[in-house]
Image (cartoon, rainbow, N blue to C red):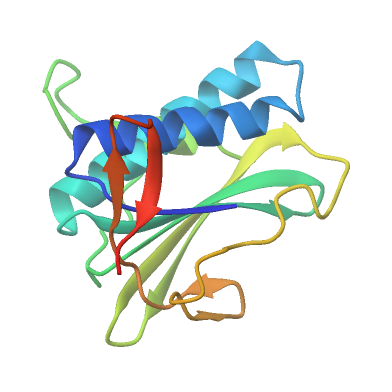
Length: 167
């Protein structure tokens, strides 16, 4: 399952987070695991909005019996700092630390010339290996080895509360 959006669009980010959390909720009864997943999705989208210009592809997947979340963006930069921030009252700087405490695994894959993919394996067991297939229904997104190669924007339609592809 895949959502393409501009993470700077607060409504689009909120709806994508909500839809992804609902899909994950079909595979767990654990409110703790689901809450952690929703927090992780929000942190990844927030980081993309703040540091990568906002254009992202949010994708749900499967990894070794667990659900995973991937965010593909167009910025190659990424600081792999998962340490606790020195100022616990600062307004920013603790997202990756929180994600590292809640996730089973975090990986960052640079995508030569087009950005990066941050993948987080959740502590959310999933029995069906095809639970989130197909990865992406948008024909204009090119996928190679499960990586969305061209994050684009899908416009959020507040009237119909759905995403619609840009022409």
